[in-house]
Length: 97
Image 1 (cartoon, helix red, strand yellow):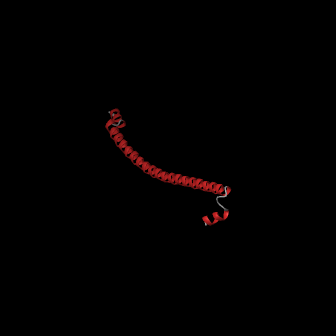
Image 2: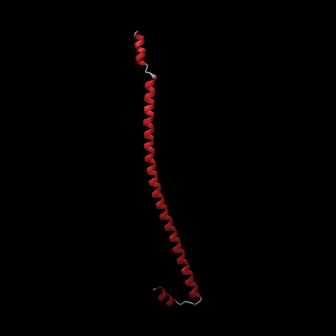
Image 3: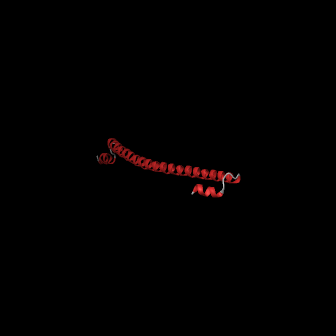
């Protein structure tokens, strides 16, 4: 009889394990969902910031290149006009001031 008592005390029924496993699985599932949502929120905000930063950087690059090329074109036109004497230095100072 003592052996029967010992055996019944040491073994736990499978239903307890199943309940514990199901409960644990659900808790883990909810934790995973919560962590996933946090991760998504963080990454979405980071990607939005990155998109803004990239857009600003590209805009700056474009405008910088455009202004530089316009300045170079203006310098070339001025040099050509001065070289062909269609424009004199004093006229250029008056025109730009």
